[in-house]
Image (tube, rainbow over all chains, first blue to last red; front, side):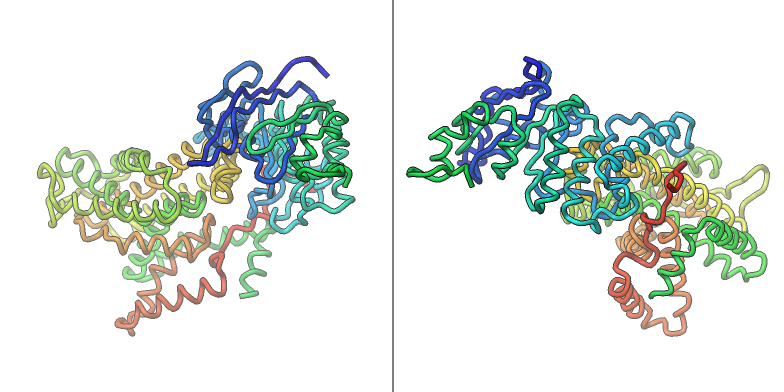
Length: 262
Length: 327
């Protein structure tokens, strides 16, 4: 764990007409950690992701990545800087093969242009081979090799989630944003996914995780930020969050009991 | 329809595919030597529409942008050839690449402001584009386009001292261009850019999130598609030796749309097959001429019902990528 913030948002605000989805929200992610962003439904977690990745433009505030401001960049430029993401419901290229899906991750790192592709110039061939080999590496690593020539829409749901992760990792990101990676998975698949995510910081990938499953969050996170109604309500290491009355109230309402033990 | 699928399965094996390609090429080459002039002319039109279809296939088939105004780029190519040849005496064949470049440039200009539109909205704007181009041609701006009469007296193309004049000459000209374009497009399909086009078609937001510059690649598709239509325009103008606005109606854009849908979106052999069907259909049903459109509509509906992916869709699962070894 290194003591530097790789990704930071400073007072970002995103409004949808009257609704303030994200309200002056700050989060600072340390390099090579797993940082979770949790909160009840509609708290604005996915909106934060969409602001960081450039899908939404914030009305106020700044997004900083490695000290540089990301505001105003388009999603594809942000990916090229080193932030990749997955979606809550897998957004795969459904009518393409799994191999082609993973190859997508490297599009931004490719150089070959129009004419060199038409004439298959030597540097274009070399690049294609490198793209394919890296894609194959991630397919093997996530145990999806048997599906490489299958269409993405034909593989089981759990494998689709893994495939989306493989696609994002093929982009060689420095920061990976995961939007509910275990949602809809069965227990075995959940375990595979968790074990895999736990390894990522060692490989130099910082993870920002949105997740509803508390076992996953408590098991994986180095640090947790809790948000509700677009605002940050608590922050800390898992043990602090686990016993934080504000967090319990946000999840269960006022009253007895611990929401997070379920 | 099972036989079609089995047939495609066979073609995914390399020796069989090469044999089939050889058969098709030898048929295409020998055709004008044993067919009548009339059928050679029909063969020319199959080639011409195949070229137009391949152009639209990039925009509609590869990227999934609904373009119902592709005839506009065809018209721009044809008028570029006609005007530059008749006014300035530039040889018709030399205008082949120039027409492509002019059509591509126009496509870049007109599609830049509308490229962010999606689905039906883009479709409506492209219909309008097609009509605007046709009406501009009719209104004879600056006395350039000759109004409703068009431009007449285009010189015959000359290839290495050989004047291209007979149906057979034109047949070979158009098919040579079609085959060169098909090879180029095949290479593109298997490249980073071709895949990126497909990523956009499958899921625009995911494509953008994975680093695809959606706007630039959509524009590229329009530019390349229009360039192919420009080539077709040049060959068409040279064949007819005149151009007039009647040739570039909305109906033509619809026909090209049908070619791509019928053949299979994003499939090169499918598009060529689609062009053959769309051109041959009225010829075959000439005896029942008054019901031709009825049959055409029925055939389209039947195809969409039985083979929604088109007659010859691209089979990705059977494709082996370049340099890939089976393990």
